[in-house]
Length: 330
Image 1: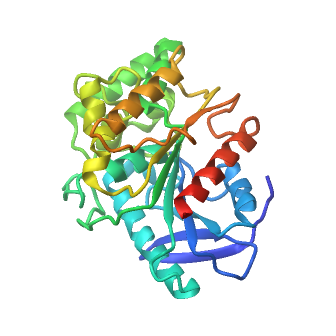
Image 2 (image 1 turned 90 degrees about the horizontal axis):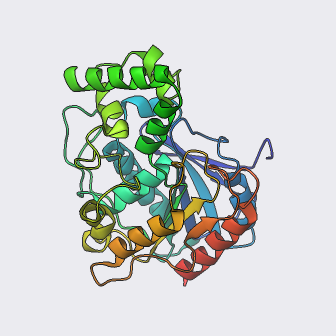
């Protein structure tokens, strides 16, 4: 991974920025907006710069969004706040490209999430628009989200199942998990969980996590009653998938199709999960309304890839992404 890459830092809303990777001074009409996962920020996902390089001869550039939840902010954040901030960036980029390229609204905008960023992508497409105000969550202002021209989810794994896998590996982790669940159930939503416990269940030990976000990620009442963040668990019912993937067409925020790229050797995926069958279930739910919202051509399992596609499978993945973007641009 290169240690530097030229581009432009955009202040798209108060205290929010996005870095546009672009080695040329020429503005391009189409934009791919990248959203990282928990603890991610600029230069933490190795393939972003490789996508930027692959886009150089095209009419696309990639923006890496810096949300309130970036780096350590996720512990007191929410998907509602994330998608509202993403929507602000979509509006900003559309206006920017119209001014700098004269595209007059023809420029395309695609959102792409990695890991928990994939939860942001699906939440953007299926949840209420605008997001409802919630006294337990700071920073949600009830701003309506604009439609996007395409959407990609990479490494859409379940935080809940990853956490449960950690608890199976040691009695100490299981005990910490039980204490955290008790804390989150009994304490106010904004109360900070004991930080010495959250690191034991697979969360970043340096990040303060409030009770509301822990409950959302751990989703202790799943699969019967899944929390907001529990979108990708393999044991979710068809009814639950109908409430998420199945609402994409009705919500009207995706103008084309949704891509899912699951890493073949994802270290955070639950042991024994049938990735192919899981993607098929998501596809059925997304297309259930009669309108084709699942992208068969680009979606798939990235051969041999780790969670963040650090090495193996990277070229395969980028080829699929470029092919998809070419179709969206038509």
